[in-house]
Image (cartoon, rainbow, N blue to C red; front, side, top):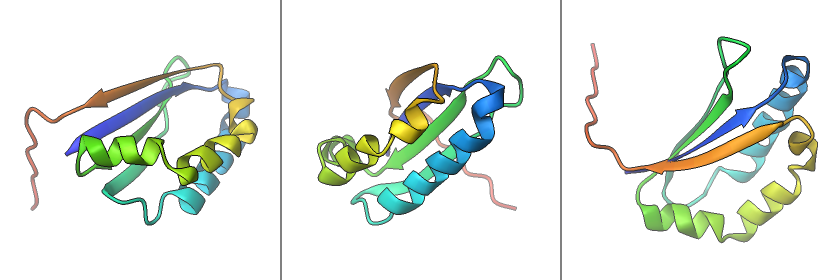
Length: 104
């Protein structure tokens, strides 16, 4: 598994519109991306925290192929509606060191 996150800093007064734009992009451009297992947008619980977008891929190669894809480019071209709400962001990538799945 390979995980890519993006911390997105959004002023509180723009949060609702940001979420609507982001969800729309997720639903339009992420289904069918090869190797993408899950995509989650996490809402902050405090005003000083960012939103966090979490994308779980099968492999780093799947992630890199998505970033190079026409779908990724189109989604980010369409992001002008989202970008006006974001005051800063930081992309980070990870490989799990431990993955403990607890199912009741």
